[in-house]
Image (tube, rainbow, N blue to C red; front, side, top):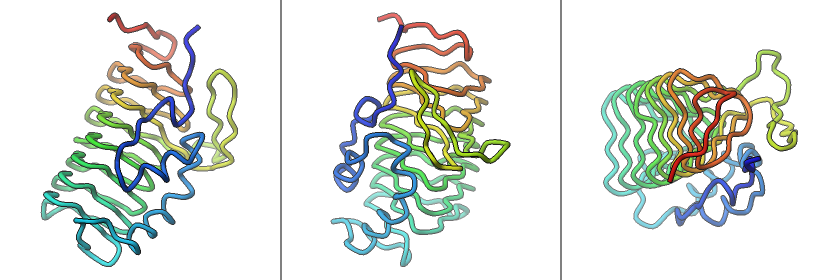
Length: 222
């Protein structure tokens, strides 16, 4: 049976210099969620070399492109080389790494995107962590609230009680989620795993696989 990774060190290799120590101090990725706002405030207070305040609570790196119709609320950190496309809505408590893509009509809230993460078209990413080079296809959303509004349980090789009412998805380094997918609260996608379009998932899915359906997961051929 394939191991269902849930540890931060199994899912992510954070190399972003202003994130690395904080990010790697957590055992499980959902533990970061309540701490994102405070950490963004710390970065805003201390500053990041080469970064400029776009507003009192928005700090942006070098060579960031922000289209006029994008809306950015703080506290937010936008990494160097990132593109924020028309109609994007950043609702605050957001940190991106470098060279990310935040696309048309995409909404971000209380989340972390590591370097080169892409959410380019009609995506919702709330209370979630996206790894290096992670990609969400058009229309894919990270659902972050259960219908019964009870605390989210991450169901992997064992059940992990998060104690949090709002938990989205954790999409590891190099993972690629197809168009029109719904990642239900507490879903974890392993490193270099691909998910077929129009798939609704809940639970933990191993790295190095292709998820064709919630009940059909195959190991990627090398």
